[in-house]
Every structure is written in C-alpha cells, then in structure tokens.
Image (tube, rainbow, N blue to C red):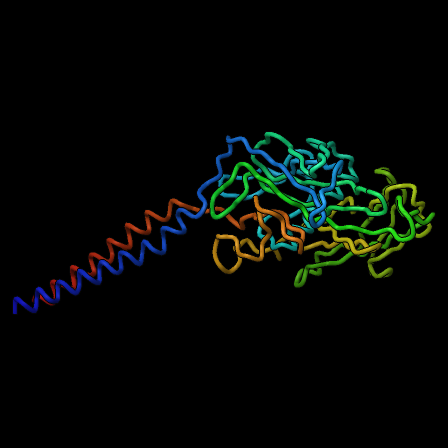
Length: 349
C-alpha cells in the first residue's frame, strides 16, 4: 500500500512539474516580448534613399511629428495634427499607407511647418538627428536627375522602432523609391498645360447609413489656397471632376468638415482621389487574430522598408499589459496546488 502511495505521489509531482513548465512557457514570451516604451529616452532617425543600387543625392525630405505614443504603443494625434479625424490604431499595412497619405494631404493643404527639412548626401543618406519618442510623418519632394524622376510616397515611422521584439531607439529606414523614365531626351519631361482631378467620396458605414450626411463639401486648393468648393451628394454620385487646371500650380483636394462620427482617409490613383469616411464604431478595438504581438502583415519598423506595399513602420496593435502575468501565474499555481492536494488526500483515504 505504501509503495502505491509513493508511486502515485511521484506521478502527481511529475504532472505538477509539467504543468508548471507549460504555464511559464506560455507566459514568459508574452511578458518579455517587447516591454514598455521609455517615453523619456531620446531617439534618432536616419534614412537611405536609393533606387535599386543607385543612391539618390540631394533629395529633399520633410519630417513632421504627428502623434504621441504611450508606454504600451498606442498613438494619439498631437500638435498641429490633433484635430484631424485620422485613425492610428489597429491598422494593417494598407491602413498605415492610407493614414500616412491622409496626414500628408493635410500637412500640404494647411501648410503645416515641418519639424525638420533635410536633403540626402552623395550616398543618398540623411539624418534627422535626436528626436523625442513619438510617431512621425516623412514626406519627400520628387527628384529629377537627367531624364529620370525619383519619387517617395509619404510614410509613418514610430520612434522607437520594434525589431526582434525589442524597442530600438536608433532607427534607420530605407523608404520605397519609384522611378519614371522620360523618353526622347534628357531633362524633365514637359508637363501638359492643363490637367484634371477627380474626387470620389466613399462611405464605409454598413449598418449606420442613417448617420451619413446628405452632402459634404470638398475644396480644391491651389498652392494651399482654396480655389473652388463643390458639394458631393447622391445626385452627382458623390464625385466631381475639375478640368482644365493649370499645371503650373500644385492642386490638393480636402474634405474640410469631416462629419461625426467618421474617420477620414485619402488614397490616390493617377488623377482620381478617393476620400473614404469610415464609421468610427466599425473600427474594432480588439487586436487582430494572433494577440498583441504584431503579425507579419504589418509594416516593418526599424528595418529596411520592403518594396511592396510602402510600409509605415511596425506599429503594434496594442500595448503589452504586464501586471496580469504574475497575478494569473500565482492564482493558477495556487488553484492547481489546491486541486492536487485534495486529490492526494482523497487517494490516501
């Protein structure tokens, strides 16, 4: 009888050891995945601008600080950007692209002064120096060399950046560069005398169409100043085209008064600008499948930016909450110990 008890105790201790190992193998990676961001620590941002292996020198970049970031990596628009209705949390790669483009539209339309303006050196590199923790927007002017024009789409980058589950406070990015070759001779390709721009309003508010306004006002800006304003509604299929616009000016289209309760995003394809209003409640507060750790579909932060799509940085969906880990671990072990003890006493009786 005593031998059976010893054998049973040994099996229960072994089971306890396996359970203990299993619990910690699941909790430790979560607890120590990235940690919290040190909001007081200084960061640096540099970039390398090139097309294939060709460095693009004297390319001009602008840097804007658009949002604060919390210790748990959640973003809140701040400064000159705080009143814009642009969502920055729970986004995939396409969402970050749209957010960057949208904030770039407002920066140009409202003539927001950049935090810094830098040009690349002969090797295509530049540094923005020491910066505070936060979310930054980077925009670039097109650069023509010979008969080739190089462009860089706006993108967002978080400082610090997340690399290998560790916050890196020295961040280096390599933004996507596209090139347009100009046929038949060197120099910049002559622009047509006129151009046209089409604006299209899209509603992402399934189940909440009653909240949609009957009309919206959209302004066409000429070099930052309002040139014309039009009304979009169901009668014109929520679209309008401006024609015969002089190509000597920079034209921007903005929706000035975004209706509540909607977020706004701007996406551009050739001469068509799509303005999407998304009902706020349609944006889930829950992180995507896979938990709090960013998945592979999101853009990469503090690493070279992949070519497709143009990323915005590896921005976590939500922060890591550490306090439940030790609490749940202790409670779980206590409950398991009580159950094991009761089972052992029952077997003894």
